[in-house]
Amino acid sequence: MEDVMTLSPDFDFGWWNAWIILVAYYAASFFPFFGGGDKADARMEGETDLRDAGAGVRTAAIVDHAILMPLTLLYSFVVPLERGNWWLYSGLIISALAVLMSLAASISFATAPVEEPMTAGAYAVSRHPMYLSRVIVFIGVGLAGTSWLFLLCALVDFVAWSFAVPEEEQHMIAKYGSHYEDYMRRSRRWIRLPSA
Image (cartoon, rainbow, N blue to C red; front, side, top):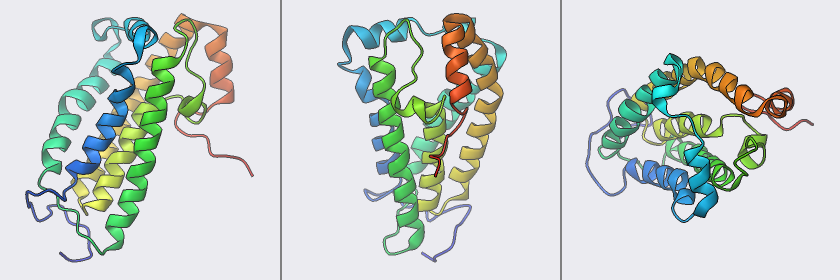
């Protein structure tokens, strides 16, 4: 394989393909909820049912969960990871950051008190670390597998959640009041970089 990014990679089904990254990411996203105990169960029960969510959140959830997640996972089985090029190594580093962010966000979500918004861990860096980590993992896989399609998926996912997030934040303000508004003032919607 050449050391260039392509719209359609080699389509070679194998063990050393992009699926390895996505399976690690999804495992990190969902692992804390299996065995998270009563706190994780209570937190999940307290979340808004999609039927009660606004159009923006419903649309983003459909785009992300029903379209992008399954299709990128299936596509990742035929996207080879070619050893020895800088695309792979840069993509693996970016993907590893996404996996760690997703794991930290899932642990924070599963262990935070139900009556308070999540503000610690990954939520101290981003108000929406789960959405952000998925965009980042798509970028990482796109680089690692030299696939423009994954980069396009990252853009679509980011745009979909960008429309949904303000609606979701209004729901959080209604649920947690001034506690969430204070959190919004001291955090960034997508990412807060450390200050020098």
